Length: 96
Image (cartoon, rainbow, N blue to C red; front, side, top):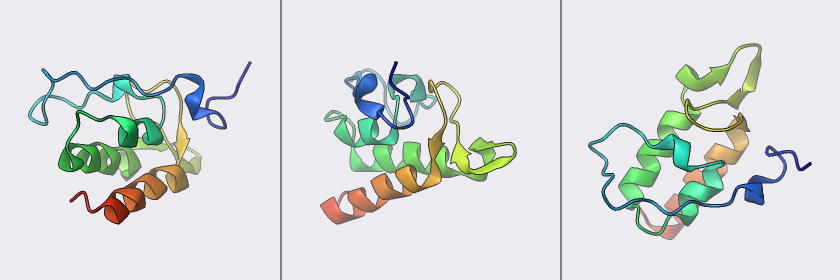
C-alpha cells in the first residue's frame, strides 16, 4: 500500500468544481496533496495561493511534528517543504 506522504499521486488531483469559489469555505477535501492544488486547472492562482497559505499556516501544524501540516478535510499530513515548494511554483508561473 503506498504511503500518501511519499506518493501524492496515489489519490491524484481532483477537478475543481466550478460552483466552488474563493468565497466559500476551503474545499481542502478535494486535494490529497499540495501538488494536486497546482494541477487544478479551474482554480485561479489567487485561490490556489489562499488554499496553500492556509495549509502551511501554524494553525494546521501537527502537534509534536512541526514539519508537518494537516489541513482539515485532507486525507493525511504533508510536509511544510511540500507546501512551500508548491507556493514557489506558483510564483514561478506568475500566478499571483
